[in-house]
Length: 100
Image 1 (spheres, rainbow, N blue to C red):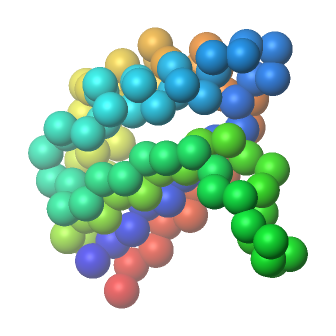
Image 2: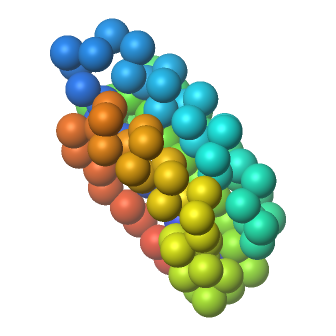
């Protein structure tokens, strides 16, 4: 199993940036072959001080292995997402990839 977790900070100057990012993820990323699990959502509030609440959107995709995730990264729909959505609305991103 290989997990690809992406944390997005959207442009505060664009009030619809988080929604555009979510819509774009569903449009371009959800149906890319090889993903066993796809989940994108807004930051969830928490009373727990250890929970980071500074971001707006997170993405979690689980693949069978790293090679499948590598193929996902160069898939034309992923490239379109980066060019047509991500670069327009995101100011910061952090990625956590891990296998097991």
